[in-house]
Length: 148
Ligand code: ZN
Image (cartoon, helix red, strand yellow):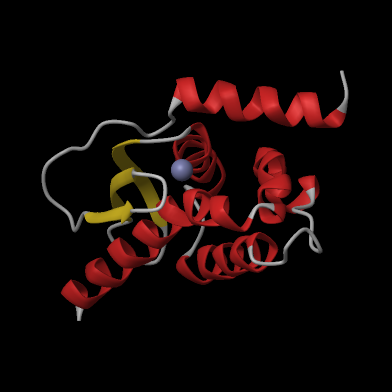
């Protein structure tokens, strides 16, 4: 199987698996909409009791396979990270997505998210891949405000 085919398979798998799918009440959900593709995601970040670590992420949404797979892959990789770790990780992901094919997502750092590397060559699809991440950053900011 070529790397492209493998990455395609990971995206299709996560589009079905949808890790973290299903919203519970409470918390600070963020709803994000991508008008260029019609993707929608509502996502809630949960923090540990001491407010330092991402203890869970729940989401619901619909849209293209890239938008849904990116949410599922993000949840698979970032739950358990501290907030600074997540911020650095999200910045690295965004930088790669905006690089127009110049920066690949290394598997060592990004795990199966590497499957989304190719998206950065297609400017119109970058918003699809970023949607869940924008929602996570927004929900995290709202959650942290509430702790202050
Ligand atoms: Zn899309």
